[in-house]
Amino acid sequence: MNLIKIEIPSLGENIRIIESFIDNAKEKYSIDDDIYGNIMIAVTESVNNAIKHGNKNNKHKNVSLSLMLNDNIISFEVRDQGKGFDYNNLPDPTAPENLDKPGGRGIFLMKHLSDEVSFEDQGRIVKLSFYVN
View (cartoon, rainbow, N blue to C red):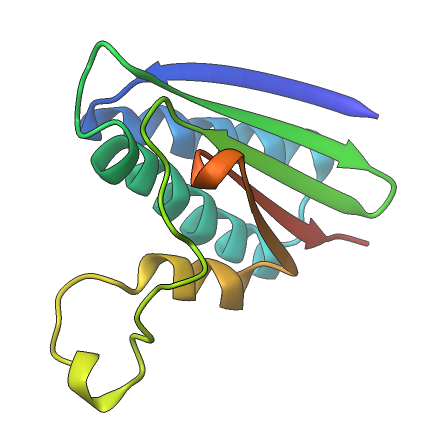
């Protein structure tokens, strides 16, 4: 099993570091383009949520991202230092009353682009898994 981990301060511009991290993983593990696109969107969305909603853009709080490759599964774990959230009671962004709302699609996207999504530690940890060949 391979494990790589980075930690960034909670600043929006640090998403570029996450994108580079994913690009490096694509090269290192020869990740297929289709899966790479899903990983890029889902993981950056998760890190963005950790920065904005978890750590409330507090640059003194960090977001950590780790990547694990185990057999045919590549997993990412995003961890913030916030208060967590109630991930069991999220509004459905596809419901008619929510279609025009600007937010609320991040977790919906993550669930559709990843093969598995799980939340731990009251929502402070998000795990995203993707099946690779």
